[in-house]
Length: 114
Length: 112
Image (tube, rainbow over all chains, first blue to last red; front, side, top):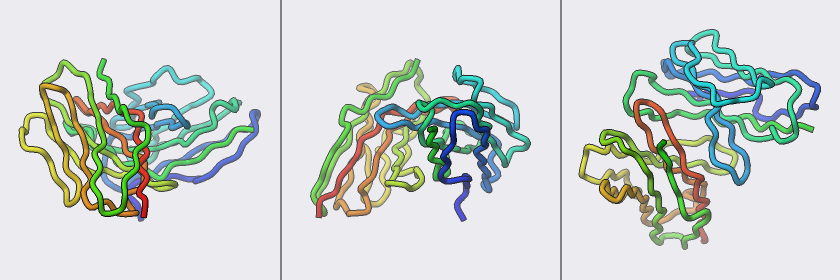
């Protein structure tokens, strides 16, 4: 079992659907992240949670809504997405009080918006 | 703001040969961390090697080593004795105070 698990691995949704991505980490970390990885574009940091509190929101549209009920779980709720939101969404965790900032990634959720 | 630049979108290497991936970064900080991450096709991104800026000695991990030039703000990754399993996208990353900035990535192809 990997340290960071993401479900579903693949998701296809219409623009009017509501869906959620789930991330779970088994590493005892207290910081969790959502990144967006699109083809031909750099990795984009979306949200950061430290000890369940959101500490960063990188001007992400409101159609993406994160939720962090505890330090081990992170969700990304999706609503009325656009085709340009199709991408690989990566969850990561780290030891939040660590200076190194080393990230541990999940395998990603491949999202296709029709 | 910190930036990380990987000037080689794609690289290729013959199996068993050596390849070097380039990375430069910009920062005004003195105590930070640098990383190379590997993302194989359809698999999760994993850490390859880490360098602490206050350490002058270059980090090594088996066939992977870095050339860290702090003054030049350069952090290249050398892969020796390349193997087919090394084929992946490689990301250079800078981290300070727990916050990471990534380069655009270099896709490495290994030819048998």
